[in-house]
Length: 360
Image (tube, rainbow, N blue to C red; front, side):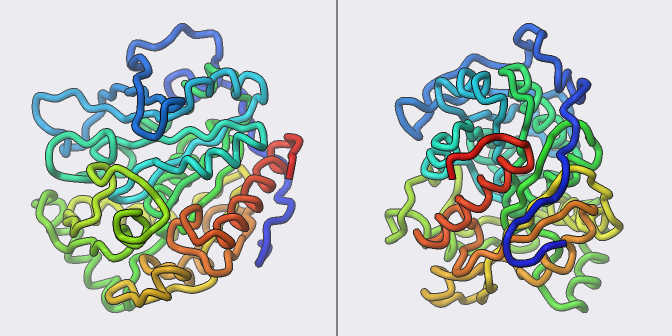
């Protein structure tokens, strides 16, 4: 492992044969589960496409067809066909893709950045219970189908980017689908519960029992400090739809937390990933209970960066580390200097890992 900045991590994984739902096969007609693109609020050049889903872990709203939402620029397919490369962004808990500035930087490097709002979250929320996910494996379906779409556009190299809970979801997906993607970037991954060792063990035991019986039971809440610090209406720099990413307290459901802790256990046991992985994290964590203005601006006030560093070796043997000075929890939404550092380093790393020419 390399500390500090990204370096060479060897060759990338194979994009060879088909994976979930035809991943890797670029000669299939448009699948029946992919909806037509429609305008998205991110701008006149942005589109959203529904990916209809069939699997259920018990958390799906009754009598409704679930879907995820692929968010992309109108000419993304042409950009992918030209470069042969694409990056797919997987958001975190109670989160959504709105990273237009970050997408612009990828585009300047010749690569389309596509977002995926997964089922029961963001643009794909049905009903009232956000992230009522009872088995993280259920979301393999939409990730696999999204990758299949990108392969059908001509992507020979797919870089999967996960943030927070999405950065736990991504390596779990890659471990179960080893030929699906070619490189992975983890942005402040949720590798362990942010609490004391005693709390981790006691809480996990309790939630494993309660979450199986009462999965929709609220057991905690996500405080609004961090989300508000980002939004332009509260003095932040970014515009996003608060129906997709709330700026109020949001309940954490027992079934969701149980699923996450089981995902943590899978990671801790070792995933054995063969593809190159970059784990990016802030230089420091701040208080997640009562963060100061300075902590909100320049630290991770959601997760413990020490957990990210400690558990990164469990991903596999091909892992690089990137420390972002002054980074926020979502490093791509940090203050200007930190997010530019994160953006430049991660794009350069991805291009190196996929042997694609870079403009950086």
